[in-house]
Structures are given as structure tokens and as C-alpha cells.
Image (cartoon, rainbow, N blue to C red; front, top):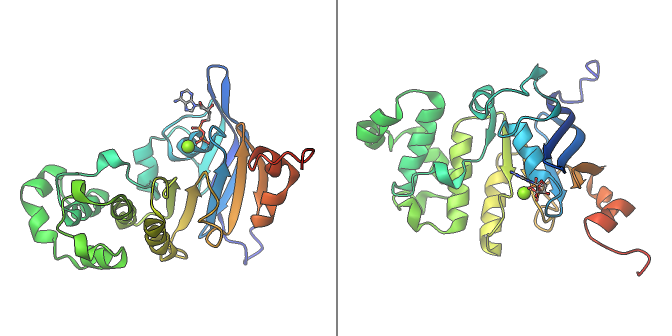
Length: 259
Ligand SMILES: Nc1ncnc2c1ncn2[C@@H]1O[C@H](COP(=O)(O)OP(=O)(O)O)[C@@H](O)[C@H]1O
Ligand SMILES: [Mg+2]
């Protein structure tokens, strides 16, 4: 309620969104609210609808029914680029990094692309070099623990380093909401800690929404979560909601009768 000053404003809202693929209902009339500066998670087993819902929020899918609001504005039919311009940023996908350029040049490109200071072509031809010493770029390298690999070609990075670079590239655009789909997928234990450390530093600066299949590494990180199953939200709240009977059955696949 607007009269309650202690409750942060809703930044992203989904109202009854549905996404179908033929006869499959990937997202089924989902209502959802994300508040400013929350660190929220979407959990669920494979095929639960997490990525489809994420794609509806970020504009990669248009819902068959329902609306998506961003800061009260209807963005349901906006493109991903238009949403990024409003401050909703998903981590760069592997395809939008330049693997034959260095880490530092990827950061320079992400920063200037986001702030539209030069065309990509200008940057690639001459200005990349001159911006390698920009304060913002150097500070980002340091805070994402990428200094050691700053001059390394992206194709030679480990997966954990690359994931940190992708998050750094997203952060350089100074988004209000950072959306990440399985940021820990495929990482070794040691790399997971590195990625969580850099995300931890963003808490309080951005609203963060993370989609993950497994809860195991996020136990002390998320403030609020939802669990999806067959396109629906089956539980919502703090970690205690992971113990609800429906979550035990659908997500943990614990058979209460047998147990
Ligand atoms: N592009 C697509 N085309 C057809 N079916 C899809 C597509 N994307 C997802 N689905 C189906 O939608 C359901 C939810 O998938 P998804 O959103 O990827 O789940 P999750 O991310 O939770 O694993 C699954 O049944 C999946 O097969
Ligand atoms: Mg997925």
C-alpha cells in the first residue's frame, strides 16, 4: 500500500500471464510481484516454466494472456531492447560477448553500447583502446575480480570468469533490475562462490531476480522465492515455503505416502 512507507514499491508485476506452446501451457495464469531492491528467486524442476516466465518478463516472449507491468507501465508488448532502456537488464547471453576480444574490451563495448556514446563500429575501430583506462571500467574489473584476466581473450576464459564478465557487462548498463537465468549452471564449486560474491555486492544497488533449478547454493542469498510447477506458482515466500506439501511432492519429489 502506498501509505506504508516501509514497503518498497513494486517494480515488476505479472498479472495472469499465460504462455502456450501448442498444447503445452508453459506458464499458466501467473501473478507475480517483485519489489525494489529485493533479491528474489524462481525455483522449480526442469520443465516447470521458469525460463518461459523469465522470457515473458524480459520480452523474449509475448504472453497469450495477461500483462507485464514495469514501474506501473504496461510493457507486455515491448521488445527486450525497449525494456533494457527502461532499466530491466538480463545478463548478456553467450552470443553477445565478443569471444575474440579481451575481457576489458568487452566491458568497454557493453558500457558504451548501454550509454549510446558511440556506435559499435566506432568503438571497434578506434575508441576501445582509449577507453581501457576509464575509471568506471577499471572499477568494474576490480569489483568483479577480473583484473588478472583483463587482457585475456574471452575464448580463453574459464566458465566462472566468463559468467562474472557477463554479469559485469550487464551491471555496466546500470540497470534497475538484474535478471539472471541459471547464473550458476555448469559452474564448479569454486566458480559458484566467485559468482555469488559478485552478485552479493549488487544487493541494495539493484533489484535482483534469479532463476535456478537448484536451491543448494542460494540458501543464504535469496530473500524471497517462488516455486513453479507445470506453469504455476505452487509456493511463495521465504525458505519455509520449500517445506510445503506440494513443494515436497513436485519439487523435491518426496513421496509422503512411501516415506
Ligand atoms: N520454445 C519452446 N517451444 C516449445 N515448447 C517450449 C519452448 N520453451 C519451453 N517449452 C516447453 O514449456 C515447458 C516449460 O519449459 P521451460 O520454461 O524451459 O521450463 P524450465 O525453465 O523451468 O525448465 C516445457 O514443457 C517445455 O518443453
Ligand atoms: Mg530453464
